[in-house]
Length: 367
Image (cartoon, rainbow, N blue to C red):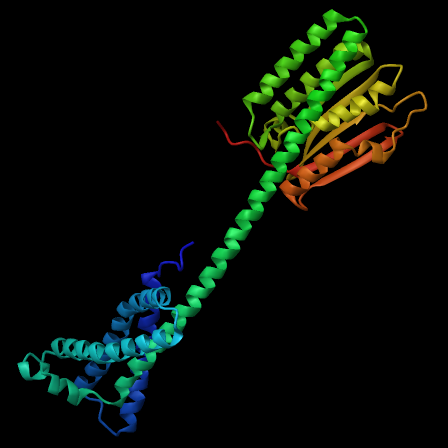
């Protein structure tokens, strides 16, 4: 994890330029208090001297930020670090003012060598130059606060990444939980046909199951797919069950054209379709319909899986229907969309069982 972010030199230069203007105003106030006349040369000196001070600190700021990190990494003793920073502040105070005064002399046209002697520089230093000593500690404090905040944000970012990875792992586990359950139900259907002596139907069901598994393998690892692919999975599964139940199972799919290209979590309909067959069609003596519909409602995608009511006095309790199918579906939706989804269950109503899902509308990108 990086200890700090890179400084934006435009921001640093802008802030120090603004501070330079404040230093100029302070210089005018101090000069007026001394009773000196504001000659053109004095105006020029005040502006050049203070802006050079500000821009010099703009150059020094990244180095002080880096010095703070290096000293903290190399020395664990706070007293040693403080002493080294004290020497750094004195060095900046001395060397920085020498360089600044020489730059001012050159800019104002004082080319004689006597103006560049250390004695001349010493004569120009005053108590006002001590401000650079205090500026050093102010910059150091800003560096400390900035780095601490940056590290805090980095820790929060990494924690958010870990939470995201955990959620993805949980979703993958739920998906892996759904797939074996679906395969187990499908093989049970084939086994039932074999026990009934319907070998030809069992072979047909295995061929359909092989097609479905091949489709699933082609999109393995994808967390979401287009709705038309999800419809293909559900249709293929119902075809397997149709071999077993024959005319007793009547599948029905209905979707708006634009909905077919919407993105949905992979195998989000599969457990619901399985439940519709197990708790609805399998309990009927007469033909029953399993309906899968998709509609766009504003910025939402509404999916519904419904089955005709069971017959013969069998009425599955709501807790029974909330087995691996609905519980896994509910958990996957919560992990993927948080509160931005709706799952509504109407169990054994007058029109049978209806499971409705509402998701954010997200069309698949154009290939």
